[in-house]
Image (cartoon, chains in turn orange, yellow):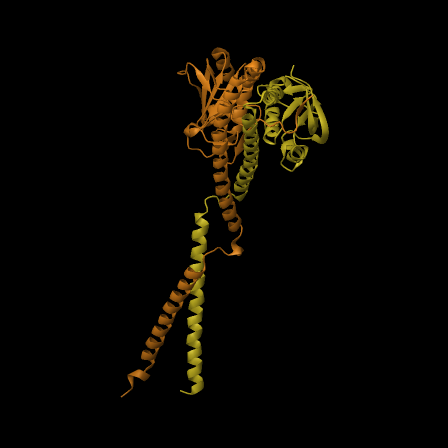
Length: 252
Length: 204
């Protein structure tokens, strides 16, 4: 009678099971160790590491920007109250006060309203992910230039979520990846551009297909949305809140 | 079984154990790494992310400057409450600031002169002036004509050459203009020179 423990088949099953058991133990312990102790990305998979740093930096800087804007807004309110008090007390300087106030309005630092036009610019709703189907910062720049060239007295641009910025002396309209930055405020379409001035003249300027060739070409070919909003009777343009820098420039 | 054979068997089993242990670590490691990479929203485009971060940093600097200026202005106003000459000084300073912005007076200061000896079209000029403002230009003239908030660029379209004077931080302006991919690339073949003192005329 043969000993079953010494038969070749049994030995094979036994050794196979031990190997399987070892495999399960090895994988289990390995998984545990990697999960428990590997909590950061290895440097070898760079540039994923710089992405993370950039992402963190962006979050920090955005929070800082929100905080700075809140502080500026708060101090502007306090300045406005103090300004009123000082001007009222110093009645002997009425001429100078009036002159400064007149210039302040001209420089765009007070809210204005009156007859004007409103035009809406938006990405094409075709769903095409191509550059020509998207509303660009350069479109807004062209439009603003065209409105100034045709007698606009004040212009503002509103983005989604009602963020609104007036075009002022130091305004730049920049494209930052998929957003547009105006006076440091990030905006996304649809953009509503409002301009104070003679409505018929400004409407004709907006309808000038030669002056705004790029916008009209893409409206026809790619479905970019660009239209005058005729429902508006009067426009209201907020005061310019960007920074007027006079650090290096001096009156001659 | 000889002792040697038994030892070899044990060693083989320990070897298998180690092999699977390493395999387990490697497999889990890969899984963790790819899960993390997948969670990075903009992993596809690090350069764009860098552009956004650098613009944010630049804008925050501008905002900080604006806040500092407002704090000083507030302190000035507080001092001026009961002081006639201080009020006059503040009003005068405020008036001058608006006059500069509105081009009511000739102005001077350090900056950069850009010379371009070929024709530019309106859109190039629009982009060029926009980029200068983004780099902190405080006053600009094109061919001796002051550029204000509402100056249309159409008036300079198609001229054979341009001298663009810009007052501001001359180092920042010069670097923004001349670095690869900088503002001068918008107009091609332009030349920028730093200046210690530029005089710009008042608006006509």
